[in-house]
Image (tube, rainbow, N blue to C red):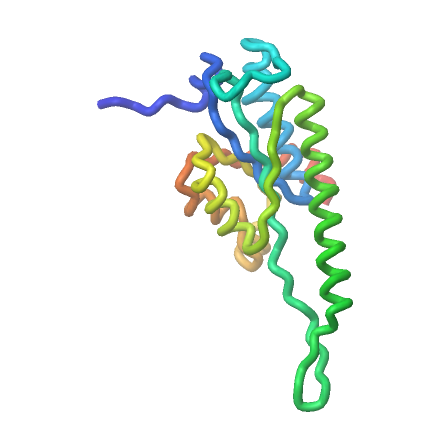
Length: 187
């Protein structure tokens, strides 16, 4: 019986691997990114220092940051027997959403840069649960890393949990990084 190599084994041997970290505005997702940088990539840097351009055959691991913007549901205004969606309102909402996404990814990319880890970012639109699973499968990542918001049982039952969904539906290994105790006490 042959066993597939574990991602931890890949890190120890300095092999190339693809890791995707799901990022949103929550402290939990940034904690998960920090954990991944500290535990999956820094050991690689110790084995093989960062070079300006390792080329396609280099042994550097790849880090992909995926951020999903939720689908917009425009406000509808009743106008007599018909309904009307104000284009100005939709444009303002889209612009605000793009600014939030840019701010989130800028912060995440800076964290990667500070650790001397190359990262690429992807912004998607739709249901975060489905889009994260699709992105991980499409990009054929070796590991999907996600934060957990630490929702209580009641909130998780009502709201659903993106990490719970991905744990059951992702076709790639998934690591859910539980929030640090300090994050629990913030909320």
